[in-house]
Image 1 (cartoon, rainbow, N blue to C red):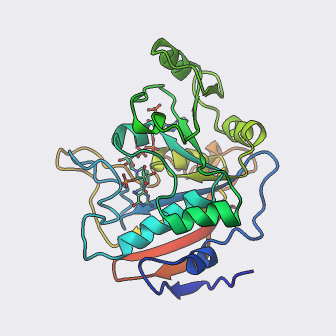
Image 2: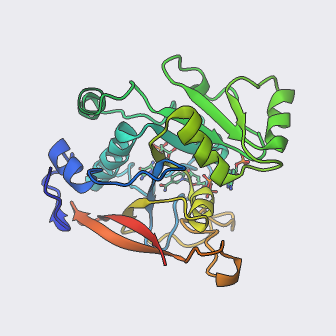
Length: 285
Ligand SMILES: NC(=O)C1=CN([C@@H]2O[C@H](COP(=O)(O)OP(=O)(O)OC[C@H]3O[C@@H](n4cnc5c(N)ncnc54)[C@H](OP(=O)(O)O)[C@@H]3O)[C@@H](O)[C@H]2O)C=CC1
Ligand SMILES: Nc1nc(O)c(N)c(N[C@@H]2O[C@H](COP(=O)(O)O)[C@@H](O)[C@H]2O)n1
């Protein structure tokens, strides 16, 4: 078993496999009986912004400072995210991911060393199942993720979304979980029981992830804390998307027996002066 220091510095921004496996080891995790083991991955500014939402840059890249060549830690963030995709049986994204990233052709690792790790060490299929969750059914059906023959894609929706998709001729690989909107507990159960998903990466924005947190469905978080402070609105005075828009700190509304999420930090990493990387187990106190 690899040693997993609590606090450490990555020796290079292009963080190599031994340091990735040490930081993000899945040794000893407990996969619940009724759902996969679930982690969320996100990059966030210090004030909780996960996308600038400016015209021409609706993705997460600017928060990770991907456009700034001198910021080496953006590569580390990208490697950590890609390592999660390499380890997961399924990666879950939302309609918003597809609408905001019309050119991104799938949530699978782009690095050959991580792909080799997936296939040789984990003996997993070439790519994780691409799980796209939508309530409205308003998906761009010409998105590149639907064009790749090497990717298995599953759309999960409720009754409303399935009608919308059917009207547009899409019923293949569409699963209905819930009545009008998606029942997230049922979704997780179906992924485990019908699709054999033991490990699930949630690479969504904050709205979906915090709905899952509210229901106690996330076991682990992997956050890249970017040194940026973005402000809550974009140049058009519209709210920017944030990491925890829906977490309700209202004990009365919480499901019976489920306390508020509390992060128990498992590992903290640094690489250059712009980012801190944290991994934590979610406890529900
Ligand atoms: N910094 C980061 O790490 C990341 C940033 N992003 C960025 O975040 C922004 C989007 O964030 P955010 O608005 O929070 O979006 P989310 O990714 O959380 O997606 C919201 C959409 O997800 C679907 N959805 C939300 N909750 C549920 C639910 N309970 N059940 C079923 N479907 C649900 C709906 O899709 P529909 O409308 O189709 O019904 C909704 O519009 C984008 O700018 C994106 O680029 C995205 C991923 C990671
Ligand atoms: N943690 C993290 N770091 C980044 O740099 C990210 N971009 C994301 N977001 C996820 O990555 C997908 C592709 O994003 P880009 O188009 O490269 O910005 C995006 O769909 C999110 O799932 N997360």
